[in-house]
Image 1 (spheres, rainbow, N blue to C red):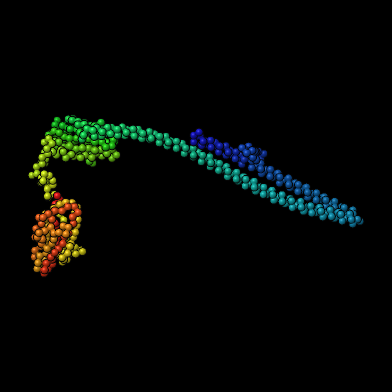
Image 2 (cartoon, helix red, strand yellow):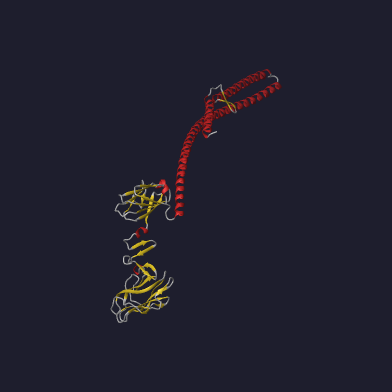
Length: 457
């Protein structure tokens, strides 16, 4: 049985009970109402029966009063007749006393009956009020039952809507599963076949689809500009991938365009203008965003000092000033391998000047291998009387054969001479100490800046 059927049965039962309660409250003085527990008097009949009992009690009381009066009259006659007989008079007097006592008892009983009748009438009124309250509650119950029926209908509608949504979600999940399967297939081909699963050559506009996942598109735009359109990521699915390369020498552009609200690096499209220019595209279906990476291999066509012939890559060091070839290795030049170490001495807490002191000013630990190559420096307040001299130590040993110094009355630093015994080379974990060994005999120098030059090796 459904919830709606149960609620309807409850409403019907409440309405039937409400009708019987209405009959009990509003029925006539001669009726009773049949209920599941037996016949019940109407309120009018209950009141009428109580009034009948009261009237009967009053009639009985009146009769007793009349009987008492008759007994008193008889007693008076007996007293007169027995005037000569004291015994008979005494007996009559006793009878009169007894009759008087009975009269008082009857009067008391009548008063009690009247009180009981008034109490019964009060109780009948209370019953009528309770019956009216019950009728109101029955009406409220019927209203609540109707509200519950409406809520049940709403719940049924919501359940139907949820079922429809679930079906739609299942359909979407099926589509996503299909796309995921296609992506997985393409990924497997990608893994099995090398860098790209398939190489496709295009010389006309084309739309990238699910089955093209992981492919490289080599595009020839010699006949005119053309466009590669990427199907919406919502259709392609998560982790969609492809690569596009322009292969011709013409000035015609190859444009890769996203669909709908999708973007490529935040824009609607990206353009390839140069021969061998190559971009790889990775899509995020959850955000509708394609990320495009330009592959460095596209730069091997020349023009930047790098060329490729078969398996040999050639680098023109005259063009690429940031590179050098040393000890059989191609590496960054010294200009971009710098790992210089700056130090200060003769500065106060607020960076104001204070006299130099013979002391250690800084220590540090090196994080990678390298080589000391020199130093530069400047002092604001020059030393007089004698030079201000500094030293740099590696693991407690000076790296200098002759220490660097600020000569008397000179702001710029005179370079020291580095040791050539390997002291100037360092490895990760070596300790460096910077100290002042002489401050100036007459006037001590102030605010010295000293940078040890080093390079990564």
